Length: 249
Length: 224
Ligand code: HEM
Ligand code: SF4
Ligand code: FES
Image 1 (tube, rainbow over the protein chains, first blue to last red):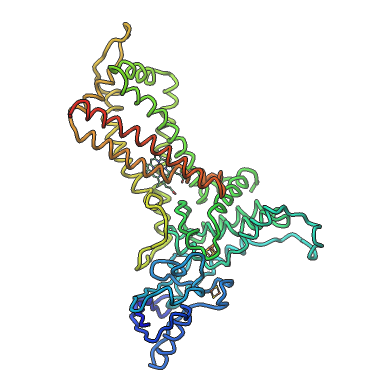
Image 2: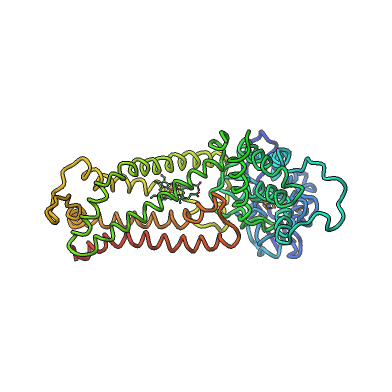
């Protein structure tokens, strides 16, 4: 197939970027979207032009690196797929594909399609961990976790920190990400101990980093490659409210 | 606790509480207004005068005003802040599935606010500070609020249209606002999200349908 591409090019964080048009011939329907970009870059390098910078690593939807806003969707077409799982069969011969970086004040563009997601690291550092001494890996069944809680915690733990929730949200809110982390740990015995402090600190950090607030549009849930649901946001609100009313600061 | 008031979740908590309070108010308001549809207006006049002369209203009225004011102030503040969280937008507008109302709550709220201002000038202001003709029910002198309402809807057909429009804006605001309010205070889970959405639709249909039916009734009664 022949594909027309409209890609955001920006030399560095300070530069003023603009959209660049490319045409790519011989695109195979079975290629992944990232392979298609690789072949575009090979072509550009051969022509002596600057290749397009984009992030990717695992290619199996677990690292959360790949982060492209494709034709109006974070991670492109398809439900619960990361960019690395999008294939060219989702497009037609002659299609124009517009590729943009995540857009959010808290995710500044570094170069072309790459954004700085350090804000998520800072969020994790604010409380997305367990600091109590949990000892060695416990014997099976020595720490009992109910099936429902275990399943829920596992669902939340599926979050790969890609930032598509922020990219999809009209308010650039990080609520789904924070909700996944806070819920995952609050549901498990080792994480419960610090649940209140964690909710308070992560939300305070989220506000400080310039993410917007949640207006419950549900856009995050619709685009999350891991199917994290907004019921976790309700849980985060619950955790935060009860922590605010009970934890002395 | 002090941080709570300035935190994003804390601010939304107040939007939610005030929104829930306003939704209760709407139910009371509609219940009384529905009396406009029965009899010659005596029933409505008695109820309206009972409400305005009730000493409890001296307390409820300022709380209601405060509810509106807080809801509007937080709405404007949160919306502005959220707009700043994405200084540079996308070239291709979002194609993500999300309800129109949920993305336009502030616009809908602003339209409701404009309606509210006209509505207060039409009735509240006149009853409170103007002169309203009186009527006698069982020897008691009462404000003839029924005549005020009927007169407005009889005199200018576009008022009927305006009130129906107001109901439509309210409907849209409530289809999202109802379940969103429960989500914001954390009273929600996988199952209840769907249930609250359904209940919200029913609530919005009853409230907006009820408020829209009253001007329609007067339109059919007088104009047609
Ligand atoms: C009778 C009138 C009104 C009722 C019953 C009402 C009800 C509600 C409810 C229940 C919510 C959901 C709160 C939440 O998501 O936590 C809401 C949200 C909202 N309301 Fe209202 N509202 C009314 C009037 C207004 C007015 C006059 C404005 C603004 C000028 C306004 C602006 C908003 C905005 C912007 C939101 C969304 C806030 C957010 O999602 O962060 N509303 N409203
Ligand atoms: S919640 Fe979903 S969209 Fe958001 S960072 Fe985690 S995996 Fe990505
Ligand atoms: S490259 Fe790792 S999630 Fe896509």
